[in-house]
Length: 174
Image 1 (spheres, rainbow, N blue to C red):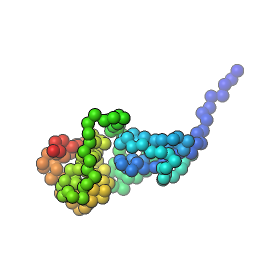
Image 2 (cartoon, rainbow, N blue to C red):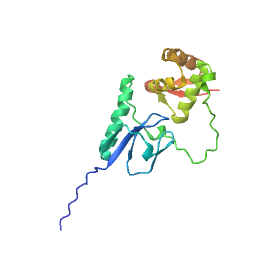
Image 3 (cartoon, rainbow, N blue to C red):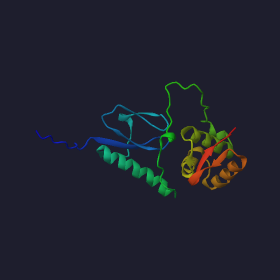
Image 4 (tube, rainbow, N blue to C red):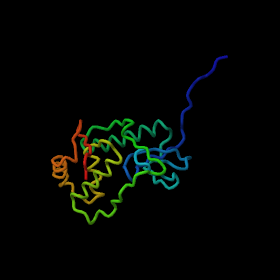
């Protein structure tokens, strides 16, 4: 008896979308009920997701997500990020420490808003590239032309550390 061991082609539809919080592209099968972001922990109801596009097959979905993430990096002039396990955070159902609410950012100065932006990034990533900071500037009402001076100030004060390959890390933000 000869068995035919061939792989079935996965032709199920997958929705490719971008996380609202961390702006990471992801995919989800349309038959799923919910999807949890691996980076920030935000839960999405699949019926309510306004997807970027629908692709058939998991292989195409993964390739499309990688392509979109690389386009973000290249459009900002950086090398694409290859993720490792330490770049993801696991969010438990009940957090033991309270995360301060930074929603009232309009009352703060540009330097305070920049520190808030860095705090939020440090909660999501241990190290992050400069283009991630640039992506978040508009959300925190910080002009792009002030970024270099704010980063130099942060490095000089010691709360922003420059790591390998133009990546940054936060230390002693208070």
